Image (cartoon, rainbow, N blue to C red):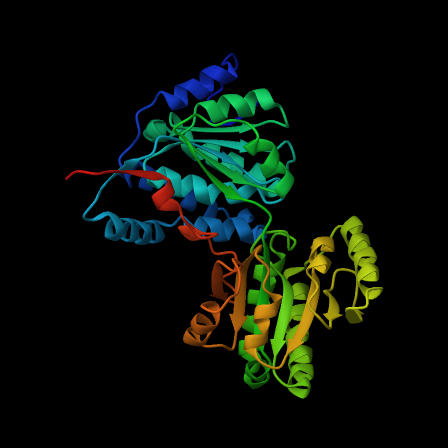
Length: 409
């Protein structure tokens, strides 16, 4: 086990001692000033670094950590708990997903704000963004004024050693699992402490729905914004984030959809060009082989591909949930045409998480959502907000799970 943060230059510390040190600390009060000040300092440390502009997903995360947003969360928390007696739950263990490691920051922060102690396990797989984020966290958390946060936080990295996971699971009050289905199954097989609870965020899948008429009626500026927002949703994490759209549903007549498609994909390609988006060569090859597989299926029609890293679009003529399992990310989109919004119901799978939309009214979507025939869809957001993390995620109110309530009669 490698201790990533806080990096206090203590070379001889044993991993069990490090874990026990965090577990033995008292919890903080919810939204304690020290925690808010730490998050404000971390946000500024990222936002004021001009080199960080090359990492828009980290800049968005730092924007989420701004003091103004933390106070919004505080007001939300106080409204929910104003007439109740709520305390932190204790020690929270977060298992970050290997494909989007930095997602741990959001559950860590919400847990910290609820007053808990936190241990985050990162996978052995590293990437540039996560390494940069770790350095930024260490720069701030090791400051003398944030000793209270450092003593209640531990970020570690290890592979599949069950000894470490078993010890962490035995000493936590909540276990939070992010990752693929198999990773979740493997960790869930390891017992928790009798009083502990578990939150699970396994493989999820997301999609977008667009009104063809709304796209046609949008002016050039609105189309440029739409292209950039869809780019942010889909490609910041190479389309691998659980809330990034992989399917795109058009609603309208055949003629309007054809016209809208041309406008929309042109705007997205302009955004890709402006952002200098490029896939690794291996991913582009994987996209091509995956699209070849799709092209051979009876349920699919035309496959459209442009230059190397441009979006690959696969026309799908009828619902087939098995097509989703082959998706590889990197700007590959399964594209559907529907005459009306109501027909989207037949394309909803129980694993579907986020539906981003353009050209529909909120109330219209609320009526549609109340008729979803299965467990699918936990979030419905405008295009551009698919990756915005909230205190309610995958149907869980995280502040509730990260807290315990004392009944006083």
